[in-house]
Image 1: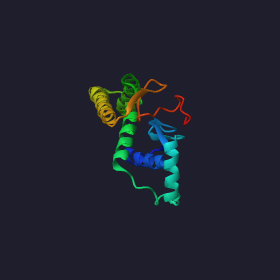
Image 2: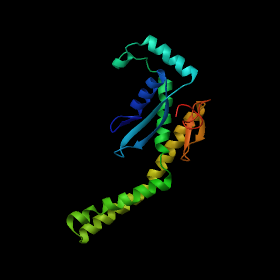
Image 3: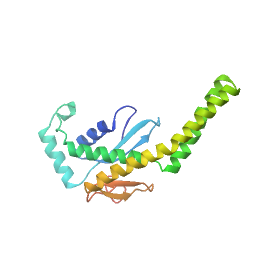
Image 4: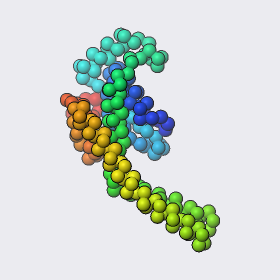
Length: 189
């Protein structure tokens, strides 16, 4: 498991690509850890014969890979597919109801800030009410945006032959053809 509070999805996709060249497999991504804004990437050992052969070949070709410079060159299409998988997993981490349950109380607390800072009088209450209304108008926009992202990345993955499966938490995930999620009889759990 790798956690970063800074970085990009593209950077994690490149990291996952390099890890896959040395015998690991992408297993998931999400926000969490000690800080909720930390992007978490899960990589697990891949015991498949293909992955082990690829790892042996790359260890021989790139004996100084641990310097972080002498690495296999990224294959753009594979990195883009990993980026799509990571993006789909991030967009699928919470359901719409869970997003509402997390977002509405937060928006309410944030909009109450003017009243706390300046006291409860008509101007502060008006500003708080306007802020709350603006947040509530943005809720459906945010939910629709996440749904569009999920649909777009899901279509990209299906077009590349990835298979939708449901994980143990009930979320839809995509695995490569012939692949499986960790924990489904897969020794790479």
